[in-house]
Image 1 (tube, one colour):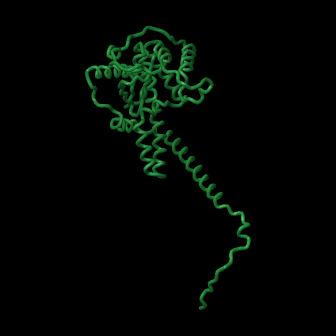
Image 2 (image 1 turned 90 degrees about the vertical axis):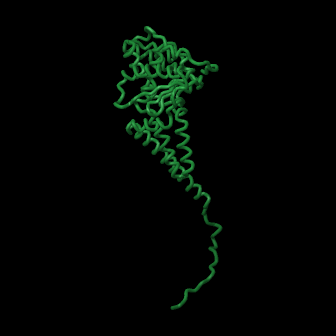
Length: 288
């Protein structure tokens, strides 16, 4: 058997004339990979947004008990505030046809922020900055009905499910980054809720608040008052489409139109807030 003959071949004469561009090919490869990753993240997030609300509510409750639940009230006044908020929330929830097993748990927060939010497991928090601006039980009930509607329709789970799915996908690409994303998502769940929901979700919650107000009090005066005290936002005129939350002026106009169409009253008797919610501890200046 003859051994193979080895030789050093000369490079092709047209080597320098070829149109090979390895950097361009690398750029195309990286660009295609990035586009595929973006598409995968988008599909995964949308799928999770659809799937998360369909999971049993008890899973939300189990997570909320470990992550969001505060300890016992610090003093008797705090216990009375929590009990007063819960009593109003229970009356509101009773007329909102919540799914079986869905319970609302309400608490307050000493922040001067003029806002409130719902998070996983039916947990709702109302900031003192907003409580100071509410002048009636009807306005408080309308606020709680709006937040309860987000829980009822699983808007919170949809938002969180999207974020958790993206974090899980990132953990495949970079485990450390995915873990940090998931931890940050759970730790910032309140901030995520305050960023708002889609416009459709907000309109749905407003409609539920209107129905609950009419069922409880026979008029929507509390909801109308609520829209006048909520912050208007800082989005420049002409760019409202950039916000997920509808402008409060637009929400009030929509309420007036809905009331006119159904013959519902926008004014009526007002009941003072429970005493425990009128005597709030001293705090700094309220924010808008």
